[in-house]
Amino acid sequence: MLDSGCGTGWSTARLAERYPDAIVLGVDQSAARLERFREPELPNMRRVRARAEDFWRLLAADGIRPARHFLLYPNPWPKAAQLRRRWHGHPVFADLLALGGSLELRTNWRIYADEFRIAAGTCGIDTPPVVSFSVDSPLTPFERKYAESGHRLYRLCLNLEK
Ligand SMILES: C[S@@+](CC[C@H](N)C(=O)[O-])C[C@H]1O[C@@H](n2cnc3c(N)ncnc32)[C@H](O)[C@@H]1O
Image (cartoon, rainbow, N blue to C red; front, side, top):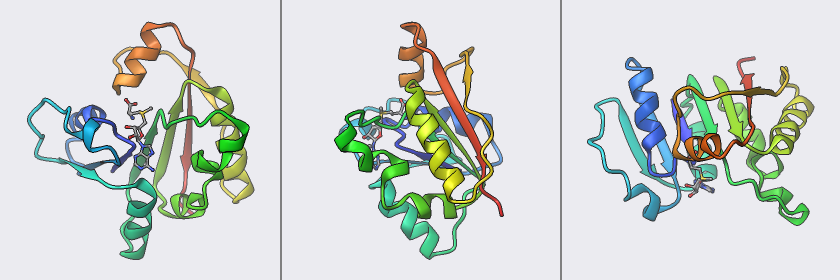
């Protein structure tokens, strides 16, 4: 399983606990964030410093396909001029979809999820609706922060298996 843009890796640890039979890779480009992880690494998790776009392409080149992929609160890049930095506007988007498995996007910015859904649909993926959800037990530090400050949170779950 992949946790792309994992921040410190706290969410990677939570996923490793929830899915003890999986190996969960947390990927983040920020050494500063990764160094702030304060827990012992669980045996079924690894944290990797890499640009996600490079890592996804390397996985694809080696034929490695995650069973599940989480994009948890990616940077929104909200200005119109930043559209190409959102994952669905980025040149790597087709490679991201080609990794397969199930993909779960979570965001507090509805537009991001709606755009991602439209872009995936344009690439031939079946796209269920974006749903809003409430948090019982936060999966990430950003999720906790947003939930505590009363933000609405959105989730898009795609099945990328052909
Ligand atoms: C808004 S934070 C969310 C962190 C974590 N997923 C959470 O929910 O608490 C976005 C994270 O994505 C990482 N990030 C942004 N662009 C990235 C890229 N191209 N490759 C890898 N990580 C990236 C940032 O370093 C940051 O840790």
